[in-house]
Length: 120
Image (cartoon, rainbow, N blue to C red; front, side):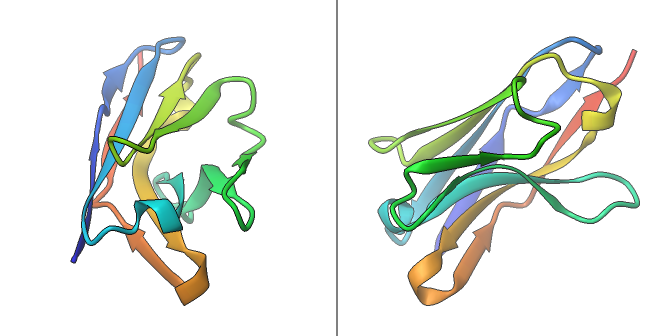
């Protein structure tokens, strides 16, 4: 089994910051997966926010809306991926999902999602 556990969400005022964490446990997939964060806002489809990409996971893709504000990072020893979100705005309000993409087996794993709310 594979489990992705997210933490760090919550309620912040516009301009505030949050740091999301995702820890992978169970079957050892972290080293073989491209990790990333997606979000699903009300009445909108799930979209990519930030992800490690490329065959070696050595490239980082950001949504245009995230560039300059969000930073993706990982810790191989902890099997964790992080999303630092700064200058948050109401339009960032969504459920954020951690994703592990096992490219070679065409398999993707998802966390349960964590709420991020930006409101005054």
